Length: 307
Image (cartoon, rainbow, N blue to C red; front, side):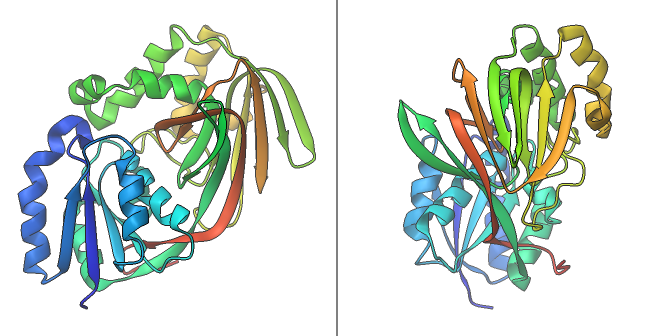
């Protein structure tokens, strides 16, 4: 198969540990006789522009990095509009949650998937929000959230990732964020239902498990069912949050009396004050925001098993 492949690589993935695997990746591509070009990002969000510009010139745009790099490349493809280019993921990051969802468990599996050319359509979450006081639009493939998730993102720093690794870094970020977080007042509309008050977290997901496979935030979420799995979590005190943490890891938090777990095609979130959003682990935009599912919005390269 002589498809044109562009690699968009993030040298800072996995807290800077990705660079040592780069030559092995190029060697693996050459051994499989794959036709490819590559570009290295030099600043945040550059992957969006690169993918958008390349979408009409390549058959596959491969994100070499973690979920943040994946999110940038996916945004570029989705913002480009009607493109035939597929998204591939080569897992060089810390979490690699999308890669795990589509069966890409290692770089070797990613290379084999590129060589075989199997793909599937999955949903995206369109996020209409605000940046620098102006309305803007972004996309997520895993989840979009307001509230505590943003604080966890801020506290799961590259240093935390480097020291604690995939298994523990997100838990460490969780507990660090808990020390200072105060639940904002939010107004949420989800279908015919409305919620108002101080809220710990509002999230809309396509991924069942996040945080490097450690947190089962959205049990039942599916990547291609045309629905959002929504968590609306009321105000939790610190001690109450600590008690709920093991339930979050197992996905049993949904039975807590302050948790509403719903399915919807869209929801709106307003808050006082405005709060930062977390999209696929990246801090992007502020409330007010609308999260809306876009069914079968993007094609991803996956293993030979297709559902």
